Length: 314
Length: 194
Image (cartoon, rainbow over all chains, first blue to last red; front, side, top):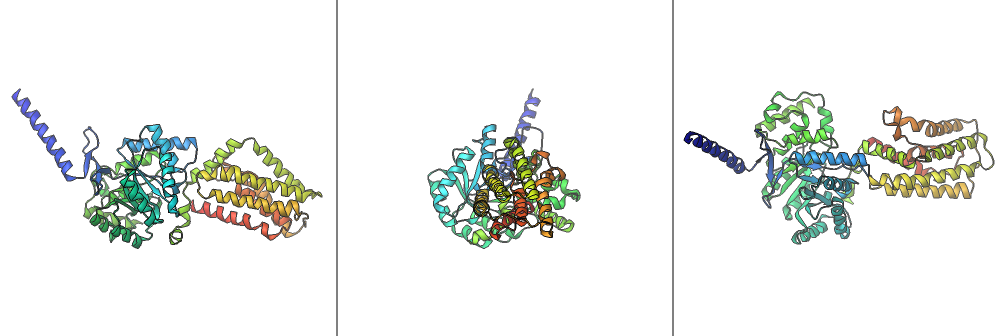
């Protein structure tokens, strides 16, 4: 009885030690109660310390399906698998056609409006119409408030940021951000990051386009700004180019079974990156992408090896 | 303005190829049996071009006006606008073209005579037959679902191509070519960037 008690106690203390180590490392959360050694990778938002999974869900192109009932159900299914795998952040924009109503359809169907980390954008040159546009977006999503509202592609950013700060103060949103993509207007973005009180910034980064490593990513780290990475696959071009090419033998050591997983792990392993938002219309792809949200992450040396390998075969 | 210029063509194509062609499939399902009317229109145009009756110009113009207005409303505004944020502007362009054809073809009767047996005639007839008879089969030929077919009178591309062919046949005023040619360019770039 005493041995049994001591064994249980030892096991309990071991589990406590593992749990504490995981928590203290600040990187991982247990993904399930199963005997799976892999854990869900999360990063904290510097301005709040809230943790979010490193893989989110983008909606540009993929969720823009109009009122096609079959495609809307497919969107909901993609979202279901995303949430099941531990996903939280979904990102959209009024620029993405019918993507916002499609998200709203999915959230309503899945009953997940309260669970999603909702990230949207304001995209209008007429800043006076910004609040109206954001309210329309909120109605499309069918959420009470947005978690994150970003100025899309730096459009009228001075005026929109003022509006967003006010909305944040009023409790109508939790975080303020700004975005760009395709490596555009980085100098202006840098200026905004240096002069504004941003919670989030969003730009493009992938294994081949690494310009942001020089200035924007270190600046985000220094200023305590969370970073969302868009176009981790160069809008699919990288996947196309790598299709049929052999994965490196060492990919398995970081739990990568496919090119998308390797490309995502490269992006989210940069210490300044908070999350990335690959977009897809396919359930199999979202499941595959979410596997990249499981530990381990590649080390700095492994990241260099990944770059070297990909640059050689492309 | 700087921010507008920083966009590329592909940035404005924010829908997938699948979503684009599904719009035609859903549209065709929704408007059936209007395809019969489209077939009748196509046959009337081919007949009038062949026999050139006295009222041919006005009949052809009326069909073109109806087609451009229908495509503007039923496809571009009601359907395509759901996935493409600038499709309402496209619809406006189609309405404008309908207005121009009304003025030149219906009111002024500027599409009155055809000069047959010339190279221009052969080229125009070939183009018209392609738009009216071949275009609906492109979906199947390219391996897509047959329900995604595009017909003259109902879909923008074959309507624009057939219109250019008819304008060439009738040596129509140059102003009438502008919008169909712009549309072909816009649609071509869209398909290329998609």
